[in-house]
Amino acid sequence: MSLISQNARPKNEAKREDDIKEKESEDVDALKVKKRKRGGKGQQQGIMRMEWKAGTTAKASDLFFTDRPADTVLSVYQEDADLPDESDDALQRKPVWVDEEEEKTTVNIAKVNRLRKLRKEEDENLISASEYVSRLRAQYVKLNPGTDWAQLDSRLMANGIPKFRASSLKIAPFVKHLSCPMGLREEKSLEVFEVSSDSQLIAFVGNEGYILLVSTKTKQLVGTLKMNGTIRSSAFAEDGQKLLSAGGDGQVYHWDLRTRTCIHKGVDEGCINSTALCTSPGGTHFAAGSDSGIVNIYNREEFLGGKRKPIKTIENLTTKVDFMRYNHDSQILAICSTMKKSSLKLIHIPSYIVFSNWPPSNTSLHYPRCIDCSPGGGFMVVGNASGKVLLYKLHHYQHA
Image 1 (cartoon, rainbow, N blue to C red):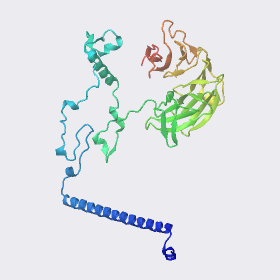
Image 2: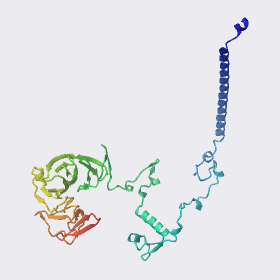
Image 3: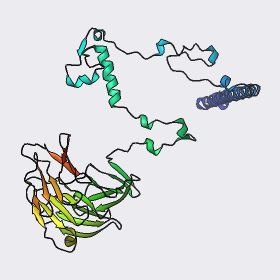
Image 4: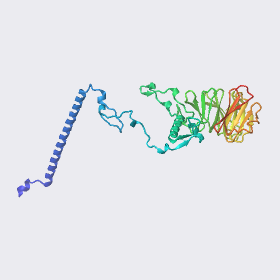
């Protein structure tokens, strides 16, 4: 009994030895599996090397294949693929749904004014609904040609990089983002602008008193000017070398565009919010209009010298002055307001008298928006809010 007890091991120690043996056997099995995997991988690589060496003279078409759409048969080898004929009618696009009533329904395109443009012959009136749909589609394509101007030409590709011709790009008349070396400015609207007499610069009215100067040659922002208040209008002088601006603070700013600095600032008499500016072709006079309908005419040299009194104050408009323009010899100043029908006046500058016989009482100009005169002064045009341009002959001038 004592001998058995001396040689016997505890149960915990026996169990621990069994666990160690099981763990060692598992490690041995895992090691064998890894060796088999390494051996199989090496064999596969060897097989791949042998296949590649054996097929070095194979064609590229045998090594690669072209992916096909999901609705076609996909095969590794092109000769095994059952590809449909490209001229098959099944490949042509068909409408998802066809209305059988279209062939039975007719549309009278001569009855409605806006549909008469769809007629192919003058006496045509009734057409089928399907023909009506096709003509509508053709009319839409005609009015909306899309972006064909931006399509790439293979001749314009250089090293895989598209090169656009300058003449192939369409410049939007008004853009909301102007890039410059100083960064990117975003404006809510760039509808109000002025073009210099030499056609070199365009001055856009921006936000927060900023004037954006854009080159007509490069279409890039070349500089900015900053007023203390908001800006409402601008006008060039001295062949584009000077710029006048006015806005919400009731002051007229004079800028030197060569140095981009403000050379003078003066208050427009009786003005709280300036809404329009205009300079004479010679640059000797300028007119300033306000939201109260008052137009002050100044001698520019006297204004720069410190004289704030206008030469003449025109009070013939009762609503906000929106647009003003001198004719070619500065003898006529046209002013208008868009808030009232036929609210347009012509002022004879040498005498500063408003023409009382124009516009005629029996003529309606609608709501005038802009005015301009021909280079010789023989014609005057008025654009109104209804989208019409009215042309008038001024008999005082012999040449247009």
